[in-house]
Length: 250
Image 1 (cartoon, rainbow, N blue to C red):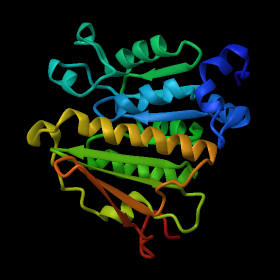
Image 2 (image 1 turned 90 degrees about the vertical axis):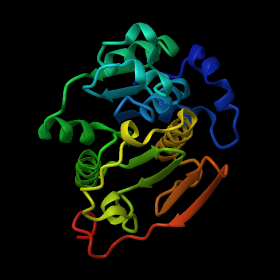
Image 3 (image 1 turned 90 degrees about the horizontal axis):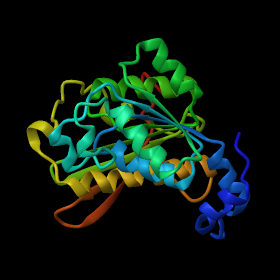
Image 4 (image 1 turned 60 degrees about the horizontal axis):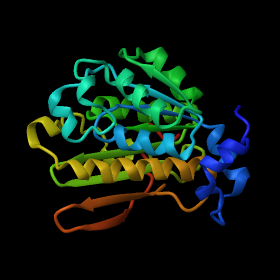
């Protein structure tokens, strides 16, 4: 674990000055390990803000490569990164933003055992993927290992965000929200997405991760936050635990 030395105290001084933070809370971020699954439109802003905020170890999982069409919204990548694995490209950017943190890039598709190991080792998982199969798999693993999960999604001009904490008996899970709707297959490639929309949701995912790690503030556990970019507003809905859920009700 890195010590919050004089240099790091200066780097994070604007956070440390917050009444709810201080050095002890900042140290929690420095000591934390966050797994980010997907280094696309959501994972890009989320990772940049977590790196800037001082999360000590970021683990990036993505086996895709950077394409020209990604650059419209995937702000962690650069033109010179086209053709590179996204995890490697993102690592290079994040280390340039904050050389005091550790960034691990996983540029291959994790098998089931590897995914379980990475989720078990994380303090918080950010699901920034773009498909239901991955989301359901990550959710189930997080609840097996009691690892808090922040799930975000964005498409067209709308987005949504929810946090799940298996350590709370009352927390729902992603399966409570969608059941078995694994056939739902809308994607940004087919439907399109406005670039700042993924920025809003990804940034809020980073904020939720900070709150889950530090215990500062109120998280979105038990709630679903909906963002309407056209109307410029947010709507918060209660998300109850499904007593019949096959993942979190046992």
